[in-house]
Image (tube, rainbow, N blue to C red; front, side, top):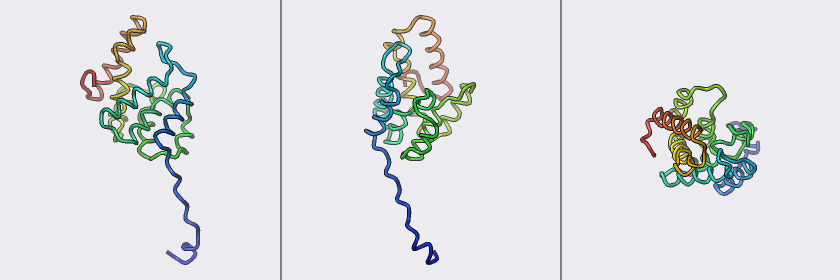
Length: 163
């Protein structure tokens, strides 16, 4: 290091959002959204985050669970995520779980499998999405379509039924 480098102020790392702050951000971003059954979408986010915690997930994965649909649903932007004071791992998991328009299920699953920590978050998401109580609130055609979709994704990810 030369003398001029030593005199330059060193940037201070920005503190990361706490899990409580991530939850508040997600709840605010999704506040007006509902799920397919008309329930507040934040109930799904809570269930996925709780599922990640129950499955032994760490703070990065729990934060990603709160944010897993934020970009895909337009609640937050990719720019917000890029600039957010979150760990690189949390950001990578959120991006891995963000399905792109026109993307095949196979490509989506490969990205999830290739991203450390993402499969556990997706397993929790799928488990809540496939919950029979949630599915019972939907019409028969939608229930059957979604049940097949979730089973197919579990298969692509190598997850057992009900995981």
